[in-house]
Image (cartoon, rainbow, N blue to C red):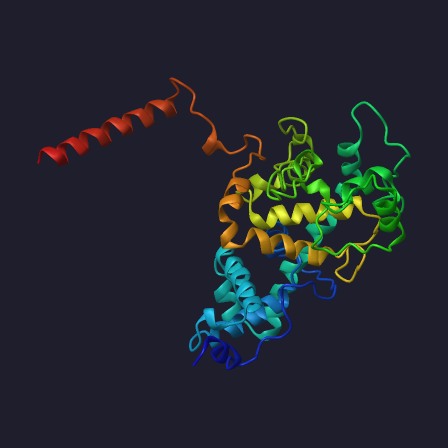
Length: 349
């Protein structure tokens, strides 16, 4: 039997794809899963229907007793990887899901979804204003003026935001291109990435990976969300721990890059409400297109280089050099000497 046959023979118990945003629901319960959902949405998968993710995941575990994951369609394989990451990131969650009723599984999903949606809403709100500080010409005000509390004059309606949102490969300074973008005659799909993704806002059509996702604007936004707003220009001084320290995060994740880039793109746009049905920003397609590239095994070399690109300030104690002559340094030195002696004894015997 071919792989295609095997795939078609898999029982279709799962509902609609969980890796798309579901309808908005209010959840009033307080639970640690809400806090976990905030971090998971930012760093693993943002635009997700969590009740469906959990329901489909549990059903798929049963199916996988007879059918290997490799025989499932690509979309279901990706969905299940997200499900497994969620289980790995929250101890005892699988037991809670297996022992719980269908209502309990949906409730858990709603709690996680509440956290993810809350974080997304908070970041959308703060970035709407902060992004104007980062794109302002040094020592000058933005002209014409851009309002912090309204986005109607952003997007292609404004010279500055329009130049940043212009798809890479197009010339914003071409009057016809600018007019077509402003009038809507030229529609921009989510997989047409804007120039602000590139370092110095320069795109090389011969080497499209060069500078990709390394612009100062993205770095500012990443620090703003994951360390603290004060860390954008200098080492953080905020008394409250940033998201990285609260959740033990000390490196960049693929999904967090896609999340921040999607947030910045939305902040520059003229759209006022973040919605998966917004055909103007097409945020869901944009987010998925970035993940498609960054998760492609054939792009691993470039992605690895991107993930080691320095973003975080020194905030992890594990990465700080140990002070000379401190008690800790003496303990470490003594341990090294003892290990060396033990190794010599093993070799001589």
